[in-house]
Image (cartoon, rainbow over all chains, first blue to last red; front, side, top):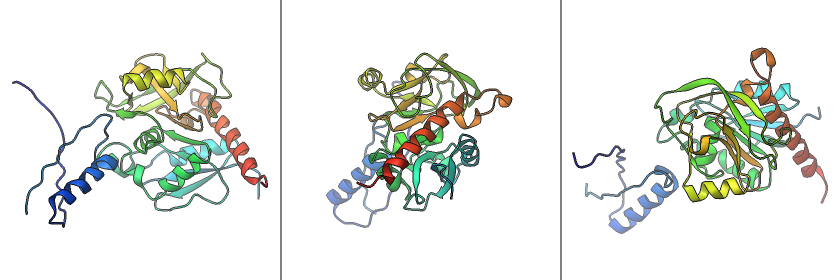
Amino acid sequence: VAGARVGRVIDLEVGVDDADAARAEIERMCGELLANPLIESFEIRLEDS
Amino acid sequence: VNDRPVVAVVVFPGSNDDRDAGWALGSVGAEPAFVWHEETALPDGTDAVVLPGGFSYGDYLRTGAIASVAPIMGAVRHFASAGGPVLGICNGFQVLCEARLLPGVLRPNRQLEFVCSDATMRVEAVDNVFLRRCTVGQELVIPVKHGEGAWYADEGTFVQLAARGQIVLRYADDVNGSLGNVAGVVNDTGNVMGLMPHPEHAVDPLLGSADGGLLLAALVDAAARHGALAATPV
């Protein structure tokens, strides 16, 4: 085993077509509530639905 | 009408020490006023605020995280920024950290087990509104009961907080893996405090210790001063 991590996945459905706008909005949500930057990092992956 | 300072006790879904906090505050001269998390204003004449222990919103996401953005928290934030005394106990401490009204964060106990026992802690600083009835070096015995009480901040922040007298209580022994055995901290203006131990469970010697009463009585002192200040015509 070269590495291991434990985390959580949060699936969000956002009703916008603009990927940059969606990313900016989700980044704001992560910064304000979804992640605590003191102890957590986050990564955003966008998928078309 | 009475002259007892009004201490608002915020009730979140999942709070479970709100009644005990109210009772204990009453025993040291306050008039507790319970306020539901959906309210957007504190009760009229609020002189101090207590965020009680429990498992607000089931502690989903992170302990205290959801509660930190509850409707009532805007009013709590406003009250704190105006210099009003705000005390967070256990889950209330976690809420204040998540709301960034206090530095650091509470992580799961290092032993990954719930801890429930009396704890001995040392008073580190008294130049804040909560420990004025104590002396530096004084040992207090107050119960702890938590699964996520390991306070953490980065090393630079910790050193800075200690130098400024913001690390106010430290456990005599390692209780939960808390950085520097920190049990309680205050904000940089000394009017917002959080601690994992439960002073509201230590106000009667018959139940083991009355040391928590020292802290709550100092909060009530501060509430009375804040009320008098608010009532003074400008």
